[in-house]
Image 1 (cartoon, one colour):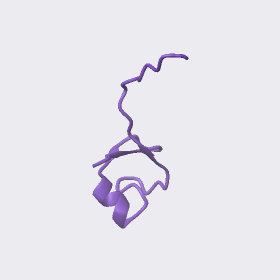
Image 2 (cartoon, one colour):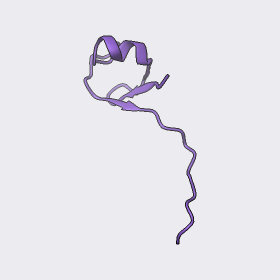
Image 3 (cartoon, one colour):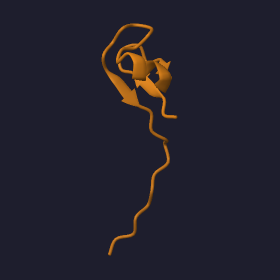
Image 4 (cartoon, one colour):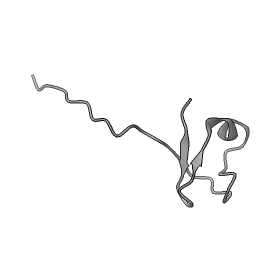
Length: 46
């Protein structure tokens, strides 16, 4: 499952909460960002 991060309060929001209601359960912000891994893929140039 993908977790989200609230843009306003910075807390992690589980995907279960986002499906039911598209707001942060802590501060009611409507802006949630998908958390991405900090791994970078190196793609060779052609």
